[in-house]
Image (cartoon, rainbow, N blue to C red; front, side, top):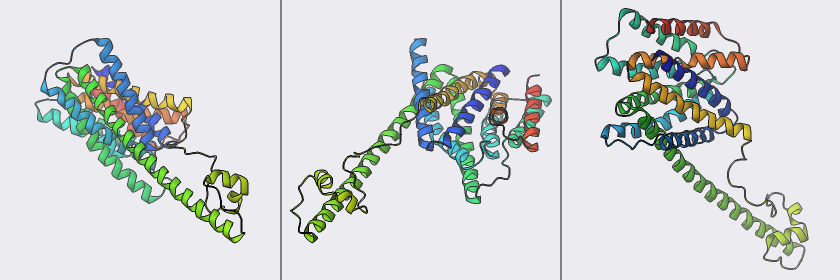
Amino acid sequence: MLAVAALAAVAWGISDFLAGLLARRLPVLTVLIGSKLAAMGLALAVVAVRGVALPADPRLWLGVAAGLVGLPAMGLLYRAMRDGSLVVVAPVAAGAALVPVGWGLLHGERLGVVAGLGVVVGLFGMTMSSWPVASAGSARAFRSARWCSLGAAVGLGVYFVLLHEAGVVDEIWATALARITGGSLALLVLIALRQRQVAVVLKIASAKIAAAKIAIFKIAVSHRLPRPPRDVGEASRNLGYEAACPQVGFRPQAGLRVGAKRLGLGVAVSVVLVGATDALADGAFIVAASAALAPAAVIASLYPAVTLVLNRSLLRERLHTIHLYGVLAALFAVACLAR
């Protein structure tokens, strides 16, 4: 099970690395909703190929609850990565791991001396590998990242526990329900935002059309021109009022553009990969946690070390001393828990 938990850490590390890059190029909601929809599509495909009916067990509702908790938790995480460093601040890694570790210990899990040492060192390693360093960013952005990361830590920790408890019935269905719920919730958010955006655009367009009509009428009266036609676009083209009224900002031929600019193929593929690797990590974690929740949570939560390695190797970011110590402590923790 150690290898499966390590797979979860690698997948989460890759997912957070890609999400951190995308969150600095796209709105956080775009990354969040896109990745959730991609993960939901993957979950539906796996369930369809597997061909196993949904078990009639009420504990699977915990998987639905995990999906409801996971969406805002991931939103806070992406917000923290946008406002802070790509290396997520300390409370995310440490806090998210402490919740399932405490839950496992409260429910009868017992750790040996070496494994207990591995848990303690692993928590220190996660904290150090995700510790924020001094940067040129504003203090306000840093405080925002801290609070968002703290909220993400609590949310992700609860998410891990709910996913584990639902996985007692069926690991695949528990993961699928969490992902389908998260994707459905993301889709509802997208629809609500789209409707709100359309309403705002139409309201602005109506105001601009009204202002354009008033401006054209004033110009026509002052210059004793014929009454402008009802088609404001035709009047602008024929009389040149668009140049005469730059303050109106009306462009008859521009049309209404609803939504952000279209994503490029590479960016869209990256968003899909964020969701796919996140779903893969969920499945690996729930399988590993079925044997022992506390060690699996600690190993899987070493994902900041993976993000660090990717930052260093692909982005050529400097690896600070405290981060290096965190990676070494994480490797030591894995060795202790593997015994």
